[in-house]
Length: 92
Image (cartoon, rainbow, N blue to C red; front, side, top):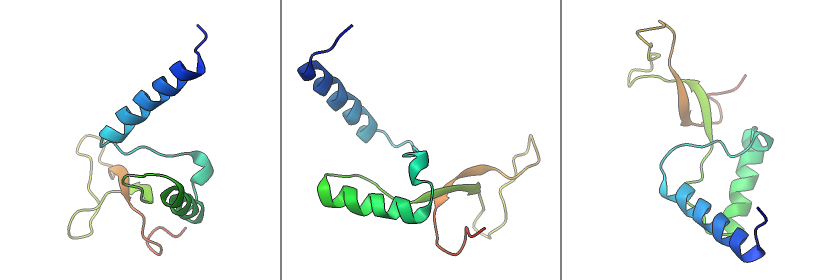
């Protein structure tokens, strides 16, 4: 099925509205996997368009309020999830 440019723009707008209304964390792209590239992208996006909830996050072991890893009771391994990136905390 071939879409006309108007139909394509309408489909893209609907998809963008769907994404913007959700609260699920989504990785932008593997191209922006380093914090400095992600920060550059955020600055450009805010400068040139309307943005919502752009922030740098990292997948790492989740910790509780005391700083101890949250353990998955089934696997006995630390739970992995998204957390806000902090410059010194995730250094390799």
